[in-house]
Length: 164
Image 1 (cartoon, rainbow, N blue to C red):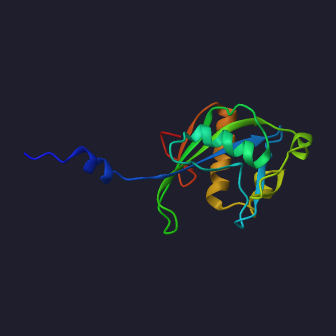
Image 2 (image 1 turned 90 degrees about the vertical axis):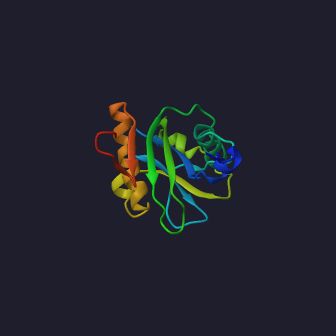
């Protein structure tokens, strides 16, 4: 039996995109959202995972770059599997716990990244018109995970039965 050369096997493996975001929230479960300059929908601080970068490293880097905060990133709250949607290939989206943030702290954020126009605290009801439905669903699950202490595994923002 002929073996496939290892390098050929490695080249044949699927590649997935990854993103990492951080959920900051206040005592009323309002979440910190940022208004990007490059797309119509709002987001949480975060972004695409670079080559040779761990998702938690991405999360901390993006928070520092986008909103000027340097503080420890907490535990993972959500790992969401995203199917190929025709524009983007399949991938994984991570949400990490950023912890509590207050209105005065949000007002003091240094938004020096040209990718971010504004940041504010919003309830999920208020965010319905600001966010893509998949992110809105993912954030609702992330807030549940904050309160339960769990980790949610999702597909398209919906918890996977028996896993999340």
